Length: 420
Image (cartoon, rainbow, N blue to C red; front, side, top):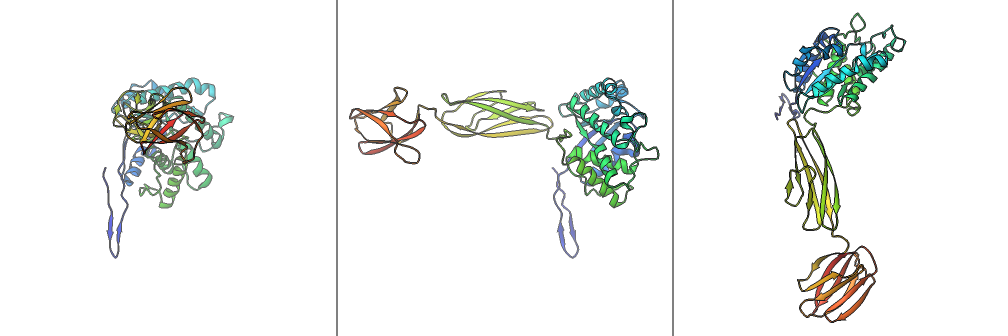
């Protein structure tokens, strides 16, 4: 991890903040909406302004549909050229907004096919859909999409459905597009055809992808391209608002934090044993640390503890792209009917002889005296004592729970805990 320190010294000394460099590889599969104004290059420049790096490549023939890409060997060659962190999938501008039946047969199956192929590249590869925008005045051939707002909403719903159907994520460029149109109409996001992006439109898309990939706001990027500082800042803010508060909505996962581990457990209070059940994703191997010096590489192990107490149990997951750890504190208690010696030597024995009765016996002919049963606040609890002789007594308990038995052997105090 590299750290960069910026020091400005004139009349005063300023020490800048430390930043950690992040890097991601991205393959863009789409058409002219992606390649206009070299949008992937703008993304790279924005990332570099923050000290981050985007390695990118594109497979973007003009007008290409998902069906066209799904049948194109060049698309799969590009996918398999390296282990991409993200493969971005962009449909032809109109096709996701067409009638549902048409989308279900002519678009969705191929979106899923491409996403599956992207995810099969490596453990760490993700498919991310490029949610595009409605045309400036909508598409007049369908009443349901004949305005920008109607078409944009259809696109939003369709891309979310693509992602949900293929365990993929969405970069919500169309959502950021609507925000700018509603709040900053003086910024023209379109070229003269009312469809393709102007430079401002491509810059907005790049800012949205930066937030989607790095989970970091593009606000403050010093790369403005051909835009004024004020317009660039407004577009950065729109992208940040569209992504950063809705990471889960878009299904976005940072490429180096994919691994996820959690576990549940069940305690066998009789044998002081615990059975563990893992829940893992993007993990190749695991390690259990049971908190008592013992470990395991098994998937769903069981472990027995020698002593009652509180143990910090860890499940650690490893994968080529990331790792994750979960820790839970587990309390192991003696079962009801169990006995734990607090004070005194091995000079007596106590055992359970019936559901509510315990026998306490001296082992060295010392008389048992001053027997009392207490709760953990030190208050006396009623118990029935049946003295068998000077060295043996039966204690019948009338309460359930944990309690202390205090007594003396030849004047020496003794203390034990019973779980009843």
